[in-house]
Amino acid sequence: MKLWRDLRPVIVPFLAAEPGRLALGAAMAALTVLMGMALLGLSGWFITATAIAGLNALTAIRFDVFMPSAGIRLLALGRTASRYGERLVTHDATFAVLAALRERLFRGWARPDAARQLLARPARLLFRLTADIDALESLYLRMLVPGGAALGAALFAGIVLGFMSPWMGVALALWLIGAGWGIALLAAARAQPAAVRRAQAMEALRARAVDLMAGQTDLVMAGRIDAQREALAAADRHLAQADLVLNRLEAGTGMAYGMAGTLTLAVVLIAAGWLVGEGSIGAPAAALALLVALTAVEPFAALRRGALEAGRALLAARRLAPRMAQQEAQVSAVTGMPGEGHALQLTGATAAHPGSRTAALHKVSLILSAGERVALIGPSGAGKSTLLAALTGELPLQSGSVLVQPHCLLTQRTELFQDSLRDNLRLADPDADDAQIWSALQAAGLAQEVKAMASGLDTRLGEGGLGLSGGQSRRLALARLLLRNVPFWLMDEPTEALDTATAHDVLQRLEVEAAGRTLLIATHLRREAALADRLVCMKEGRISVNLKRGTPAFDAALSTLRPD
Image 1: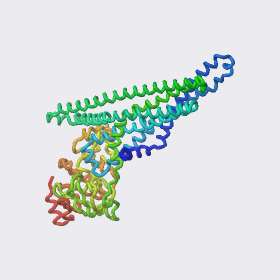
Image 2 (image 1 turned 180 degrees about the horizontal axis):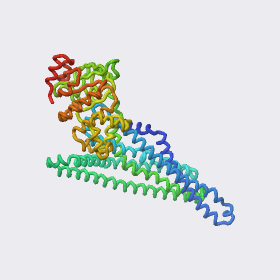
Image 3 (image 1 turned 90 degrees about the vertical axis):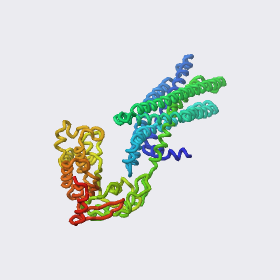
Image 4 (image 1 turned 30 degrees about the vertical axis):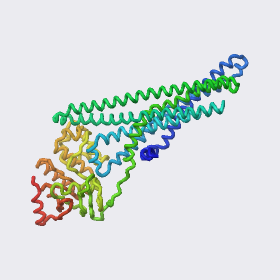
């Protein structure tokens, strides 16, 4: 029961993603096995019966060779078609299920504080999204499908032999199920520790290889490059040791199934010979019984791979289950659209950073009219960026409510990906055509520089936007913002780290493009706050004062900010 509770959040979505195709694939796998058994059994019966009929001219003339031969051809063609269809359906269904699980897992991560978690543990989360999801294919392809096919083979063999002798049919079916599944369960239990160690070693190997490649400059400067290489080699040794144990278990499991098959064949041979001697069955029926018994063990041998991978699949399921089961956090915050004429209505907002018991925002209330431009000012640590994170849902509220128009956030960092310029911009609007992209680049002051590049919009950027200067990266971020057609822009120090000339150019373009939109800018720079109609001063997670443009207090507060 505990195992089912642990795995239910993964197993249920897995089976519910493509129930029809999963069931069809399993049925076709069982049909393929049964047609193979019937083909071999009928062929053995036909050969034996033909040989016996040929001993006498009269029986040879009367013997019908057409129906059995037609049945053999039908089974041969049917088995080939069924095998092809089974592989096609099972693998297609599995890939569709894994894609659905990846999407579900990824959407589960796209929640408040997801970016911070990803930055803190990128290798682990990537491993969950790739290797752990891939490991789940064993649950279906190498456990459920072969297990069902093996059960069908045992029952079919029992039924066939049951027509010859009921006790022999029942005994064979029970023996096949007990021995076939018993060997698989024993192998799975013995392989689980090694499978878990292999999974952990593979995860460590990948993480350390990424660390070595991405941080080699820092490692060399710190004198830790040799230590990192040794850590990588140690992970590789652990992986090799786990592989050795699993290979030995696979060989042992194969030997166990071979012995079970030989024992099964010997016992059925003795029983069939006794029945022939008693006159209960003829030689063709005895050949049929032997060949059916011989083929009945083979489907159980297919469980060997699944038994060895069961530990890895169960580990992956246990690690993914909490994420799959996690529901949207129920907080007291209420989200929705603000009233008419307003862009933002924030009431009594209290929030704390993950892992901290100290509130970063203390019952903050703020109202912005549609089209208003407001600058959040205050010393570092006052809560400006935290407030933006709460408004965008990056930081969940512990209490209070937020009603906000459709919006987007321009953060302090410019997040660019190892992709083309075009696709980096289309993150803001996947449907944007080249004309819209060039218009945004023109408005951001980057169009001429992109046109001067050999590949234009197809220019490939390196990791983190490598290949662009700081000013170009910021302008690209501005162009991406311009492509996002929403009425409310939130910006966190949009021109920080830019030189004065570039910063003023970006702000001038931003002011033009922001016409009619609501702006909320978190800043400590005078040039950015000068765009605002109102200054909201924050201190220790609280709003201390609101200052409107045109008042002496507004000008005094503006003069205290850092100049260019």
